[in-house]
Image (cartoon, rainbow, N blue to C red):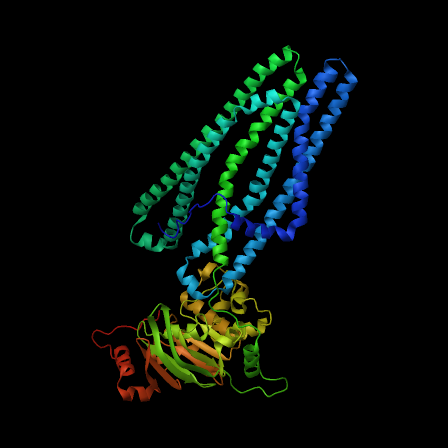
Amino acid sequence: MSFHEEEVLGKAYDARLMRRLLEYLRPHKWFVVGALVALIGDAVTQLAPPYLVKIAIDQYIAQGDIAGINQIGLAYLAVLVASFSLEYGQTYMMQMIGQRIMFDMRMQIYAHLQRLDLAFYDRNPVGRLMTRVTTDVDVINDLFTSGVVAAFGDLFMLVGIMVTLLWMDWRLALIAFSVLPLIVMLAQWFRRNVRESYRKVRLRIARINAFLNEHINGMATVQLFRREETNYGRFEFVNREHRDANIEQIFFYAVFLPAVEFVAAIATGLILWYGGGFVMAGTLTLGSLVAFILYAGRFFRPISDMSEKFNTLQAAMASSERIFQLLDTDVAVKNPLQSTVASRQLAVAVPKAGSPKPEARGHITFDNVSFAYKDNDYVLRNVSFEVKPGERVGIVGATGAGKSTLISLLLRFYDVTSGRILVDGVDIREMDLGRLRRMFGLVLQDVHLFSGTIAGNIRLGDDSIDDARVRDAARAVHAERFIESLPGGYGARVAERGATLSVGQKQLLSFARALAYAPQVLVLDEATSSVDTETELLIRDALHVLMSGRTTVAIAHRLSTIQDMDNILVFHKGRLREAGSHQRLLGMRGIYYKLFELQYKKAPGAVSLATND
């Protein structure tokens, strides 16, 4: 079973999960009280009409009392109006509570997702997490609005009818209840079979979603390799399975609902058979017999409703278990508490009011750092180096050398396995995450743009970055030329993930975004790998000005982009093997020299330096 097929139905009811779910009702407790009062009131009004019919037949119709019939008619109308009002109030309040709970739960899940470390996202597909925020929360809404509450109303109605029937005539009540074993058998059969068919439907729809997500995203590859007919056949199979599972579920409903009606008709027949005899014997009034028949019709409807709501309850238990499992996931990369450690960090990292601002900040130290993404599979081993304030450092190495991992550790997307990383003399694990990351301007090879505008993607919601600053940043990296050619300029719309822009244009926007935030440290991860040679030269000219007085760490694929760096670090298989200036490293005739020779002399068997470490 793949990760898309995770619809495992456990207990139909889990008290532990239900207690946690009911906590979401606490902020809306007065609405819940109002809804319950309206629900009980509605159930009481539902009991009144058959009894009013009994009174009308026994006391007024038999006596030919028109005035009494008019009074009963007005009372019947008043009961209907009251029932409508109470049902409206109960429905409105419960739907409103459900929407508010959905809002609260989604905000809680999203806030938690933003705190989780990148290692969590390495293990969990995006589709699964989206299901938590959307589908699973919708199922919880169904539980509160039409599941548990409605089942409570049905139960109250059943008890009310049973008490009323026993009070009116216990003999006929027992006759009416004699068919209950048949109803119980039907309900058990229905629940057992519909549970399995429900699970199949959920699995099939998950497979459809997974198939569509994968093959729509990869449509270019599908069309390039002429896989349309093959994929059509595979989708037809998946879609047919979903259709058949739904038809199977329809079968059980098609049997169960008429079967309940059939049993109800048997009960009505028994009431007429025995009740008619009681009426002729003078031990039961005609009005009571009619009321019994009307109550019998209402008695079996809640039973069928409660059986159907079994699915809602069970689905809610499964969804809540998955939601709480996500919410209970521990945040591995945590913000430090406001303790003496944090106080010491602030005292070191933040200059006092009135003190002169340092000319350069961003003193970075890697102190014997080792890191493994999983178990003992180390990507970095015993790495130590120093980047002084204002220094420009280039990082090179082949595939798997650990270059990009260095950046992830520096920004604390992951925590080191051993050793420590210091920024301005403070262990980054003791620094506020927001403050730490605000120091850095990051430009990645794989640029992520959000739907919105060009200016919005440079500003990224920071209102302190005005339009002039946005334009200055774009001009500095020579992005203004292509931006002004777009319809709307800086207000031009950006499609999802920047689909309407070229790779190079997206990278220029990412560069402008980093510069607009005026970071103390520039971090460039293959920043010019997707830019043409002419644009790369323009960016390089801008970088000389922007790097002045600012710490810069640049991962490079093209060695030409880091030749004039103050220091170059050469990594190989997770270890720092060489360090020095461009000329010094060439003179060593080691790893760097071989990389340089491969790129510029095109030696036989040369391989390009990959960048996804």
